[in-house]
Amino acid sequence: MSAFPSRCVLALWLASVVSACAPEARLDRPDTALPAAFEAPGAAASSLSLDQWWSAFHDAQLDALVAAALSRSTTARLAYARIAEARAVRAQTRAGTFPSGDISGSATEQGTRRAWGAGLTQPGYGSAQIGFAPSWEIDLFGRLAKIRRQADLTDASATLDFSGTRLALVADVATDLVQARFLATQLLDAQDSLRIAQDLARSGAAGEAHGLTSTQDAAQLAADEAAAEAQVAQLAANLTVAKRRLLILTGDAIASTDTLAIAPVLDPPPSVPAETPGVLLMRRPDVLASQVALQSAALKVRIDRLALFPRFTIQSNVGLSATQSSPAALIAAGGTGLWSVAAGLALPVLDRTALIANLRISQAQGQEAVITYEQTVQNAYGEAENALTNVATDQARVGQLDRATTSARIAFDAARRGYAVGLTDLTTLLQVERSWLQDRSALNGARAALLTDTIGAIRAFGGGWQPTSADNIAPPTGSGQH
Image 1: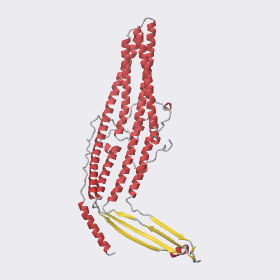
Image 2: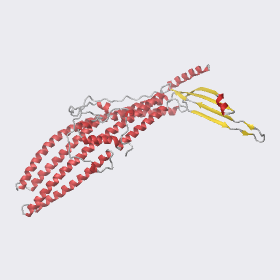
Image 3: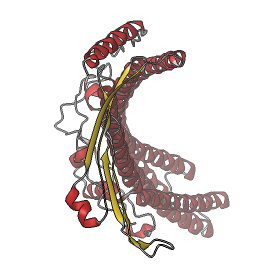
Image 4: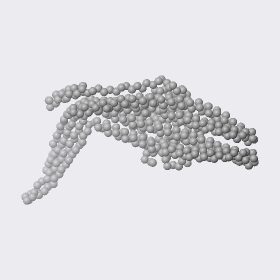
């Protein structure tokens, strides 16, 4: 035993020599500089909370659809299943860095027997053995601690992916609801247009019968009526498709579309909060996930570099065995105990070239992670600024089209009264009507675009999730029910 400390000193000296020969491997620092403010038109002051932004719309149907999607949709359930898998992988990885060992045991009991040809009874015997052989690696250079840290980062990345999935799910539900309501509004407008076309067609037919309207005018009015009927049928089909898409998103895929009522309303959205570009680095799950991926890649480089270092292990064995002529004697006798402790040192020699190549691969992948993080930050900034620009443009466009639609409706009503008394010809009436319908349709489209772009802007700022750990994530209430 006196030579044991000397051997340990020698091993440590060898470790230091080998460590000095390990190549350095570093990653570049990512460039995530952002301007102090967006160049897009400034957002109005708003008290909208990004965490549960949909509540600021004061829309009971939207609240119910979001709650249903988060609790029982396949998207939410699949995201939670991936979180559960990530937790298990983290536990498995961490467990592999701690001491391991099994307890083993065996027992044998031999009964009495009569010796062949001797006429004598030979007594039986019993034996038992039990042993415990733990082993562990001494984390002298911190490799195992870094592996555990990397497992934690992998779990954190899965949590951010989960949050990003929920963010996208809520935004998709809200956007699809807006699209369905836009179609419902268009369908209502088309039904109004159909009624107008039917009235004009009847007037044209009556005028033709009395010689007041030409056959060409009557035929034109009848054709417009048929086109309006086709438009109503097409929009009704599109609305049914949109309702089915919403039902699938909210976990009611097999429900009848008649169970989902869609009102033809496009209420103004709340103002987008005036955020700074820096909020993207703190809120957006994709940016945070990319940052975690970069940290994990940097750890991988360090772990692979430490693979070139010596590994120190300790193996021990504790055993107890006993043998007696009878079970009672076996218990009374106790047994013989043995123990041993061995220290091991492994130096990578012949596989050193392969380990260095593996380190270079990790370093290259780390540089990719640096660039990916920069790219994610830049894309997030671009998306947010573009979203703000779109919202400002939509707001101005809605105001302009609202005024244009009001004027066009006044002009159509006047032309229709004039046509009824013979002061306006049919061509003029149709042109005025077409202008009004186009303005009305454009106004509804602008209102829908404003709602959609507002949702997109909130999503671009990372709205719709609350930073949390995987341990605090509860399973969807609909898991296993559908």
